[in-house]
Length: 161
Image (cartoon, rainbow, N blue to C red):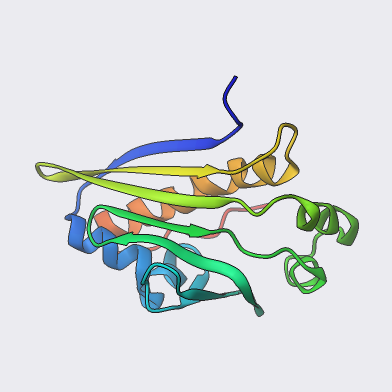
């Protein structure tokens, strides 16, 4: 039996270069994700994560792989009390997430003519992971925003409650 993971594939009318820029440049990531990253995108480099007034600078948040236009991988962010506060989440739930092993996300880009096949693989979870349940809700929205931005130039509107 394999370890639990999240895998999501979509096709985006763009180039590998534009998709890479959208995954790594703060001006893009902020528009579809609301997050930005301070890093040089070299393997082993630290990543400082910024989102909704929250920042995380943890030595274990690092770039794992960076092969421009084909593959990008990094460890997932830290969960702390400031995260719970910024995202208006139950502190006990977020504390439980913080006790789970750190996961990682990998973006695989494959040119397919006029489109790029993007596969997001988020793994490193234990069975029953609450983080896996959370990211499984989040990734489809993030990737939809990324696809819309690249194909139309406009960000998706915020979903209604």
